[in-house]
Image 1 (spheres, rainbow, N blue to C red):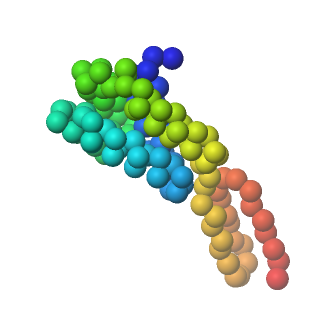
Image 2 (image 1 turned 90 degrees about the horizontal axis):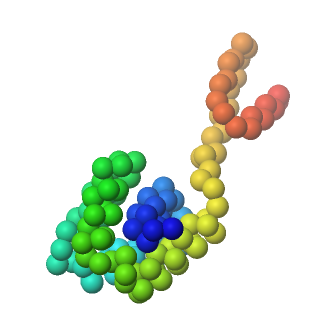
Image 3 (image 1 turned 180 degrees about the vertical axis):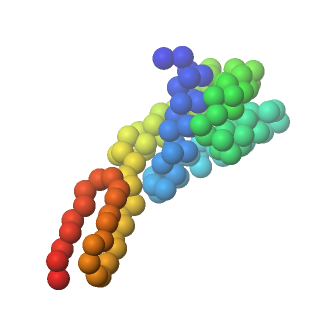
Length: 122
């Protein structure tokens, strides 16, 4: 896979799983490295833009453009940190929906939603 695509796709995937501590730590390490090595250019701003709109193909394209301009796709240290972030994302597993518990009393109640539903009569 193209290193530019690998980096940007990994960042997008990480943004979706920042609730996981391991992903947060690995993402922070990547962002710190980008700021330390490429803070003089537009690359940190491109990452910030993608953080604000992680589903934006335009922001992801700008990120790839800035990664290329900075030569980040040839940076072995950066690629190593991206690989560590990718492993953290894999170990985090699939995103899960929050657990919701409701207590309802009375007759003729209606529930709707997705996922597993358990009804207990008390």
